[in-house]
Image (cartoon, rainbow, N blue to C red; front, side, top):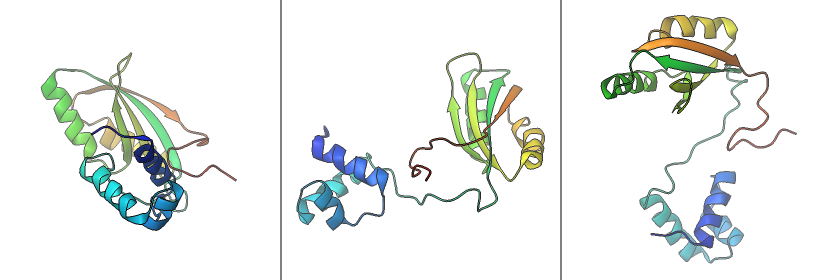
Length: 153
């Protein structure tokens, strides 16, 4: 089904605050509660909303170090890609993994406590993923904008 402006407004509001009650969501998109709830159920059922999660303070959890890792594989045929994908999904420290069209094959976002822990993970986990030929690391100095996170004060 095609999304209309109200569906899109609901999605924007929920991306901003996933804890909105149906009543508050309805008020923000100028609907009554019953049609807003029906639309919300439809957006979930049709896969537009994949789930709801909490935004956590990674630094307070001891995971304030962020590194982006370019990964080049030695083999990019389908079985090698599938093996890499399955293995990288099993690493909790890898927050995001994107296949890239360009000079390397994957870009990983990795969280750790500090550079020493990251170095250990790079050598013991990331470099040992199937078919990894080369990695290059870029350490984040500051998160200026992250999806879903409120802007810094």
